[in-house]
Image 1 (cartoon, one colour):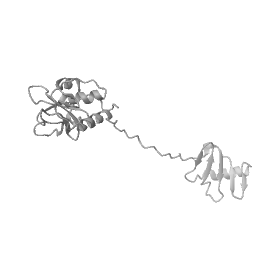
Image 2 (image 1 turned 90 degrees about the vertical axis):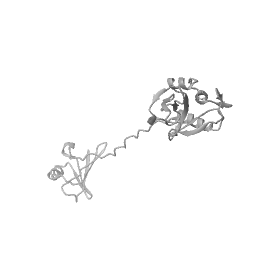
Image 3 (image 1 turned 120 degrees about the vertical axis):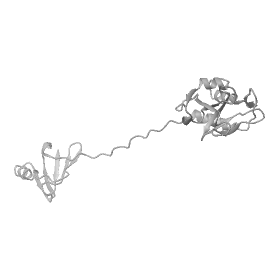
Image 4 (image 1 turned 180 degrees about the vertical axis):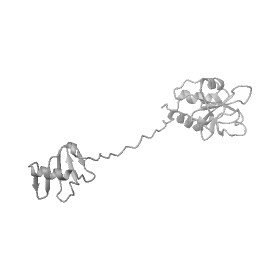
Length: 208
């Protein structure tokens, strides 16, 4: 290790060391003062106009540790709901298509036919009726709804009788009944709000 000492430094207060890496003394080390004199007198160092050059064992050098910037912790980003978003977009694009009992194509849809059409068009095998779709889907809490999830209602009888596609912001797209068209409604709607009974998911949120 080679150390460069400036003649105007106080007791070797500034040291530049090089041994595959650079090291520096952060404060004066008075213990090196007599060592500087002894080494120069003993021929271990050469006096020059610009300073003194000498060799000092590394054990005698007090080195301040290098300071390295700590990289920021990676930010965990939730995976995108790509398939679910596509389901929601397709549902919204069908708003205005007429309701048709038993329909599952562009000529018209009933509620479960709308879900069946969208998911099958994306390559997913889902049941045909609202009750079967509810049984086949993974149950989720309402507060965890994501675009593309399904919302189920009891509009008659004891079980599920109606289904819609959740599209975000507490809204869903559905095919209501004969004489009407596919529409966008709120989950807090005076009619559908009290009749909401379950939510389900066919596509995991990290899919896509």
